[in-house]
Amino acid sequence: MSDSPPPDVPPPDFSPPDPGPWSGGHDHTPGEDARHDVAFIPPTPEPPPIPSVLLHPVRAPAETGASRRTSLSEMGKAWGVAMEFMFTIAGGLLIGVAADLYFKSTPTGALIGLGLGFAYALWRILRRTLLEERARERARGGERAGSPGPGQRPGDGPRGARKP
Image (cartoon, rainbow, N blue to C red; front, side, top):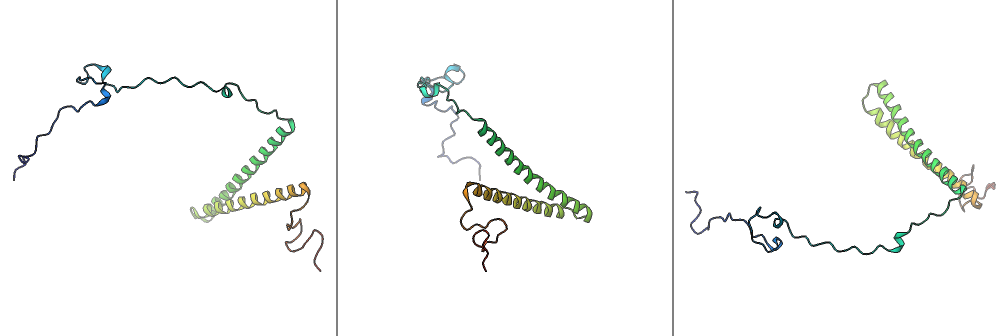
């Protein structure tokens, strides 16, 4: 069997492709004139005028000293909660690493300490949030209906009144 193509197949065409509509209608060989080797890019239109609302700066409302102090104290509380969360997790990890060193077990103590540190940090944040929410409710004018006060169990009823 021979490797030559069958006689009815035309030979391949190695001529350059048709430049197409982006050539600007010029028939030339590539490199002949560099201006015609790039695609035609139409000129950019003029941008629309800037709206007058965007020409003048908007002034922020003046903050009073009390609102600025409140926002700073809230930010400080948030940072405190975040740092407490991170250090509680890191403490659990360090206790786990110490247990690994003592018992000569490689990652087991560190993983258990990390998990317990995360769980304890989450529990502390939830407890702190619930206590702050209760304090805010009391400051707004009373207890929520159905929520037990401090030192009460859920089925005790109104504050101070115990079932006989």
